[in-house]
Length: 74
Image 1 (cartoon, rainbow, N blue to C red):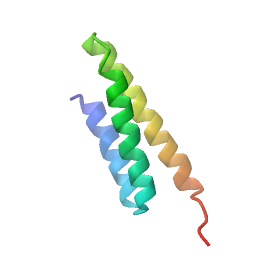
Image 2: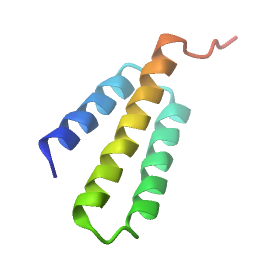
Image 3: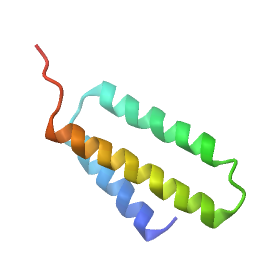
């Protein structure tokens, strides 16, 4: 596992720690699993690592945008 990937996963965990909403945690878990299933078919390890990195960036960016404007609960 690359240093960059560990850093990205740590950033995602930090964002999730600030928001205990189970639905958000479930979304992240399901999204990570879906990406892992899809990316497991990539044979070239470097290409797969780049794709995993891109997936983590997408998840992190989505969480950051969500944290800027979380849904309002009534």
